[in-house]
Image 1 (cartoon, rainbow, N blue to C red):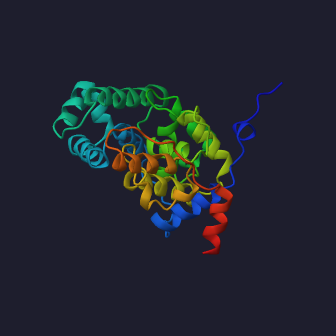
Image 2 (image 1 turned 45 degrees about the vertical axis):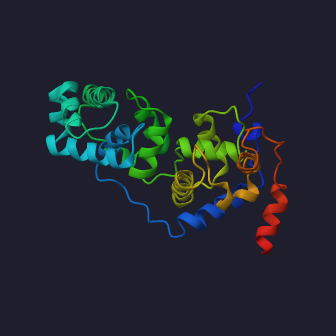
Image 3 (image 1 turned 90 degrees about the vertical axis):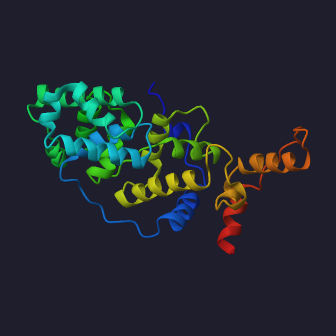
Length: 268
């Protein structure tokens, strides 16, 4: 008997369209037009650099590599030690690991495809591109999805730590699911258009950075507070800490139902 799909295991909750709408209207009401990179290999290497990294450091490291290496062939010839030296000159974390990953990707592309380019992925279908990318060393589903979404303008749905955290706090997905399952679930429940998925991806990350932070989320001013089962827990904890310095917390209350919240919001 075939195993049920993630959507069959966990149907899309009724609040999902409202969550999508509010995030879009707050953070990205006018999304850009889709645009493909001139060389998707650049995007792949920049995405590898972005792993466990701040955006400003990622951009600095990528610019540092491009300043040292006019072509990726020269980076391949310089070896992982040379790539590490180039990255170390501009700073950042996990430099040796990322140097090894970048060199290994370049080496495999050269060995198996005979060229250091991914321009031909523009004419491949999504499944072919994903298979190619995930077959490279150090490239997992999230990295492949980022290249598909940002460099090839395909309707992929990368799930980063912000999206994973927010999805769990809103109880859109089961708490036990990992990022790979969450991404596969979103692939089934979100409209399969680049604009819809790009907008949800970017707006949810911005919400995670600005409001629904890992530590001390700003639930009091959150546009999703009435839809979030976790908000009552965090707010109750804040109020209890203020009223009771001893640290003993009262019983946490849950907010009103999602259906009632959606109805009230649309009527306001």
